[in-house]
Image (tube, rainbow, N blue to C red):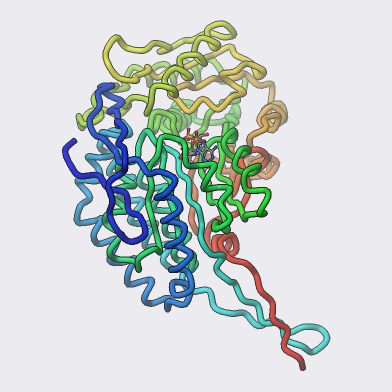
Length: 469
Ligand code: NAD
């Protein structure tokens, strides 16, 4: 892809001192070179953000809104270019890339509303009034993964800037281009220093998360990296929002429309080639319908159109990078050793990180493919005795991002969903998140609540001023 990719640092667009290759996962060919930020640029970005903070936090909400609207208009006018970048750097089928761009625009619109967080007055029992303020924290380090290369950076930018903080964003090395373009499109809209977008090859994270100028780390990525960030941020007690890995369970009970539910879960599991944090990843299916459910999934795999993500007919693209591809193939080997791979299981003989949609049956908990987060096109189906067996197995995981229950009686489903140990649970749906509701991981899927007012709370410090009576 031709184009001048730039870092946005402290209000200016800059070349990196070095560049690194960006690989198209559908061809394994280098198609762009991204500028690489170094430690000096990181320091400059943080210093500029610290300098911009006093005036940005004092900027009126309507002025922030105006800038957010301008950014949205700019992205919308270039939507096709963003789609093309996502297809090439993330291997997303065109339609899914388009949905990511539209969702990013929706997020800008929705999260702009966070800019208004007026003071509250709380009358106290002793007659005094507590004036409750939410103070912006300062400079936020945003760190994002590769599975949503535009949406994740947009979320960090909006959550941080709308709440009056400044942002230094470090994006994932294997898919940095959509975020670099976002930075280039935003850099002259926001006051200099308010936001910087940096790309690296995995070197800058520890420097950023331990830096004394950073007040908060807003991280989305794996649980393993999350642990390292907690350690690195501990000495200065930085605020943390940790959106980490997940291994969502879907419990399917005996009274469902088997073909219909199989189709919904299949589509949810295969979207973005399974590389979605809140995708269903473990399937606990009632023994009465187990064979029929597995057969329905196998039939669906026959309809998969695996191939060039730029082709509008493709509905399953490649995995995003070689490391993930090798990991997923390793998990399929484990599935073969411990269960029955009844559909897929192979990497087609062609360039690109493609893996067939894979259905694994007669598999149990305690195997890697069930217990670990696969982040790939694999559906392991575990047979359960009844709902409580499914619930116990679902809750045995160290992860707790999302979960779902599928049954004809929605009241029964809601009771079971209420016992799932996870941040978000659904009945007869999965991954149907609303930004109006709080969103958080339970257990080792992270912490720090977001969504609506909770985002304001997560990105501000409460400050109570007592007014004497
Ligand atoms: P990752 O943890 O490997 O990398 C994420 C980011 O962290 C990248 O920008 C990377 O460069 C950076 N990083 C790596 N080492 C670091 C360090 N020591 N200090 C600071 N930063 C460091 O994750 P990934 O493989 O890019 O993304 C996939 C993971 O993200 C999956 O586990 C997925 O579930 C998770 N995810 C979670 C959510 C959520 O909302 N919970 C959403 C999307 C993705």
